Length: 122
Image (cartoon, rainbow, N blue to C red; front, side):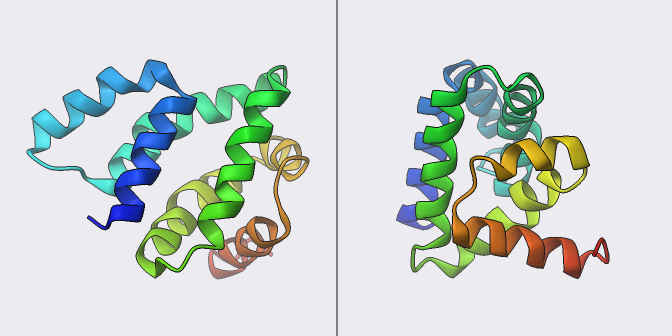
């Protein structure tokens, strides 16, 4: 795992402290960090809940500002994982996606549209 990917996992646990125990358990269970599993099963459910409630706008703003940093970094592996997990999952629900778009930066939005196109959603 790259340094930037490890930083991503640490930062997500800072944003979502309730995920820390599940993250640790996942690493113990699999003996390693299964990147897509952690993002899809541990980080995305609380993010989707935050978006569906749309009440913690400051936290959502911080998370999506960080997402914009991720998509602008030079770690193609992390950007790819981010695209096939976070962005594809956001596109699974049109209502959630519309809320997420309120917080997305320019490049995050472009990558989300690309993810939807690649899945044949557009």
